[in-house]
Length: 374
Picture 1: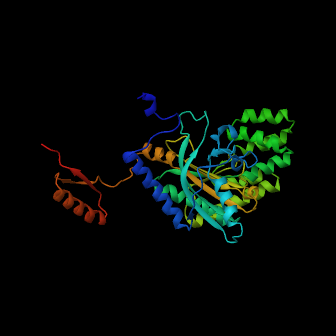
Picture 2: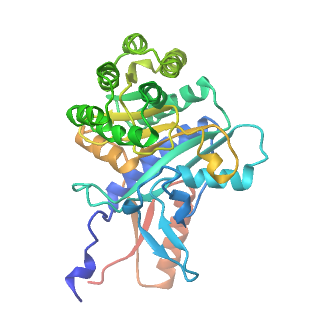
Picture 3: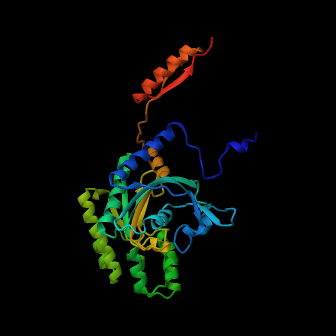
């Protein structure tokens, strides 16, 4: 047999033994947090029609999707992201529901990109979506769950950074930038490429005053005190209201008692263009990527025919496990199974099975093995 057959493609890996047991335990801990907040489990397909993740919806770029065809010629994709799938599902089955919907999920997502520099193309995600609630309290609930999920997983040192898409959009709107220009500038600001951003603005004849405001927004990050400076830096009513929303969220997070884990970043933008308001990312030591992300997407359900506000977050379990390992945070797993040996006779085997059944009822882990013949 070819040695190639036993290897996995680039970007995916096998997980087994104690490593997988620890991963399942961390997922269970986070799932318990989400259920404690009243969220209900939902499962959507691993692949969907291409249009669920189209450019108009603002999710993963087409070039980064795993695409294939069914027998009818429809273009299908492996999900890169759970949120559009759950939005579609909520519209299909819960369009008439008036009370807020709370869903939680876990499963694998797929990204067909060559720019991952050793990162995985298949990752396990667990998260939640709150649909039908546009309140500050809903934003705070989501941020509090993010923090409590990371604490439940075992992390002690991390920071959840909160931004507001409307702050950036308000400044762009006042500067007279078109939607296309706003999207192009977003790429520069997201990567903190200030020189590229300034060149782009100069080439598009944006005034020096507006350039200064736009570039300053990318530098506004820190504790709650940064919000006052952010407000004083702009005249756009939309941007000011965005900061006031962040102030209200912070006050609610103080009620939850998790404010010490929170910082603010007015220059933070997401690759997912469906986000419309507050956006969040969680970082910790030992991992270059955000281990948890989330945000408000009040227009996404409208693409599927039922316009409702919504907010959600998800934890990338693989990145979280990497962080726990590098920070030497132990995850206690169940002890090894006890072994019951039996002779190669019906009587001995029957006795071993009966004993194993009784002990398994008590929650013990029991493995049956035949005695080796001498």
